[in-house]
Every structure is written in structure tokens, then in C-alpha cells.
Image (tube, rainbow, N blue to C red; front, side):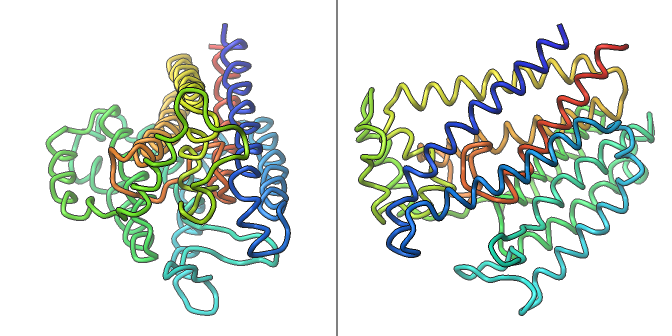
Length: 341
């Protein structure tokens, strides 16, 4: 049974990534030609990210994931240092007023994505060590909140509100399941509400136009009009809108069904995990992917304000895409241990 879960999880992820390859080329080729005189510019870079992600995925599939516990704190510290360095002019790359990336020749690295993984590993390790102390404020709730708060401040000043909300929601979900008193979590959420409502109306309007014009069957692969400079970030944050325009309602429903299957299989991995660290590590990874998918689709449909989160496995995103692949590798690794309770 567990073997079937691993196969299903991996297969669905691969299908979503294949859809991503096709849609990234379809949504970016004209823009890439206009800007770089190479219609395959973004596709080639994405395939490089896929190769890097595949190597990391098989690495994390092959090691004992329990070894990640020993690197929980060092990885978090390294992430915090990188989040500080990326804000320094000359070190971090600024794009459209946001300083979120390190630039290395033909690829960029976004330290907030490493921080997401580091915090999930750290919190999973913290919960597994604390036992019933997790229910207390000073020994259970405050330490992970300090780590989260420091990373959140460094990410939000980049500025990157979407990633801040995502990792915050994931950590709170992990702590809630672990038994942290709901009043602590609710108080923090209420204090954060003033910072949650930001967005760009133009992108949402163009996204809704793209989805609405696709109808049931779509206008045809490669025939989107909104990608012709009407819809910014068509191959990244709003790729779901291009799927809706070119592949229609059937295409979007198909993608949503695939994500539902992935999340269902992820939940099965969580339930079959025999140890506490693996349980909460899997919970954090599945919740992060699910949250990003829901938010991205919600933003594309206009029911949520713009948050700048890519669609997992599908969007062109470099660091975020690699994070998605690594998450699959770790989940498959955790699922394999469930065969031997």
C-alpha cells in the first residue's frame, strides 16, 4: 500500500511538471523573443532548474531523512544569514523594486525558498523533541515563533509578502496539530491581519479575462492573447490563467484534480509515518505545497488578493520549483520508512 502511495505521489508530481514545461514555453516564448531574441530562453533555464532539482530530489530520496534533524539549526542559521546578505546592495539582485535574489551568471537563487525548507525542518525537529512542553507558551510556542518572526521580517522587507504568509501559515498549522493552544495561534493571526491585504488590481483583472475567454475547451495551446504583454508574470505567478485561456475549463479542472490527488497521497504519507519528526516534516511540506497551490489558483481566479506565489511544479520559478522537487524527494523518502513500522 505504501509503495503505491509513493508511486502515485511521484507520478502526479511528474505529470504536473510536464504540464509546466509545456505551459512555460507557451506563455513565455513571445515575451522571451521580444526581450532576449530567443523564444526558448525561459524554457531552457527551466530545464536547467529541473535538472538541478532532479539531482537534489534523488539525493534526498536516498539519504536517511532522520539525518536532517542534525542540520535543523545550522540550516536555519545559514538561511537567516543569506536573507540578510540578499538585502545588501551589490550582493542581492533587485528586480522591479524587490531585492530577493542572488545572481550567479545564468541562474538566480532566492534564499527565502531555502528559509522555507529550513524552518519546516527546524519546527518538525523542535516539535519532535519537546513532547508535552509544546503546549506551553515560553518553551513550546515562543521559540519557533522567534525563528519564524526573524525570517518573516527579513523576507517581508525584500519585499515578499506572499512567501511570508505562506511559511507563517505552514508553521502555525504544524504547531496547531502538535497541540499548541489555539488561543496563542489566534492571537498571532489577529495581530497579523493588518498586513495581509495588499494586491494589484490590474493583474487580477487581466487574469480573470484570460480565464473567462478560455471557455470550456480553451482557445488552443499557444493561442493565448493575454500573454501578449497584457498579463504580467504570465509564465510565473499567473500561469494558471494561461492554462485556463488555452486549455479551457477542462484544463484548469484537470490541474486542480491533480493537485487534489497529490494532497490526498501526501496526507496518506503523513498518516503512515511511524516517527514524530517524519510526521511533522511531511505535514509541513504537504501543507506548503497545498497552500501555495490554493493561493495561486485563488489569486488567478480573482477571489484572493495578489500574493506573488508561483503554482507548485508548474510555474517558472527557479528556487521555488527546486523546492517543490526536493519536497517530493523528502516525502517519498518518508513514505518509504512507512513500509517498515
